[in-house]
Image (cartoon, rainbow, N blue to C red; front, side):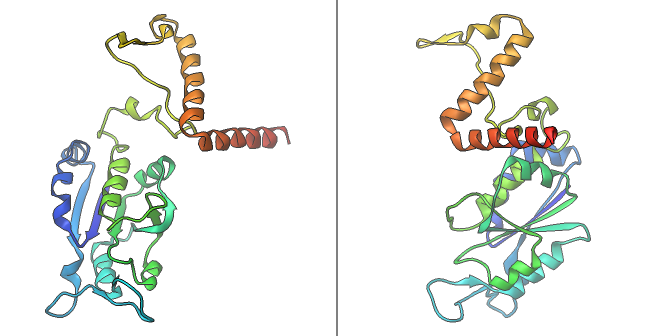
Amino acid sequence: MRIDILTMFPELFGDFRREAVIDRARAAGRLDFRVSDIRDFADGCFRKIDDSPYGGGPGMILRCQPVVDAIRAAKEADGHVILLDPSGMPFNQKKARELSRKDHLVLVCGHYEGFDARLFHYADEVISLGDFVMTGGEIAAMAVSDAVVRLLPGSIRRESTDEESFDDGLLEYPQYAKPRDFEGHPVPEILFSGNHEAVRQWRKEAALRRTEQYRPDLLKEYYDSKRLNTDVTES
């Protein structure tokens, strides 16, 4: 896989390039990770990439020309262009798995008051980290890259990605390590039973309880999907 990051602040990705999962995927030949400065594509001697919006209003917006030229320089025939913007669909594990099957991602980081609206015509999709606004898209680009790259073969142990939160619509079951009892909080005895079927059942029930406690919204979606699948099967 190849990932291109288009940003105004390429220096922010210096340490990220050396992050364990990214570095391991690059060393294994699974990842070609590139960062480009959008300013390099700005016209004029001042390399101006932003301007005030027509109609007035606070702040500045990113101009079309430098961003589009940066996209065109980075994008190959199979390139999938993503604008990182608060207006996009919230990123999740399902989307991470979908993107991990792409050959080439181009992640475009927004800044200031956002993109000129015409730039959305040059993207295949728009992604957000959630319903909040950040200063720029660099943190979002790192989050998306990390979530995608860790799913590539050779990045981490395969079994580590087999049972994860959100894959089946629930949070992952709770896990424990030494000591057996910490300040009056013991590890559930079932985990020492050696009964694999009993442990599997406990983990399923624990995942349901944990999701109900921390993400009841997911639990509703989980049961709704179960009912929908049952209705389809019976019909």
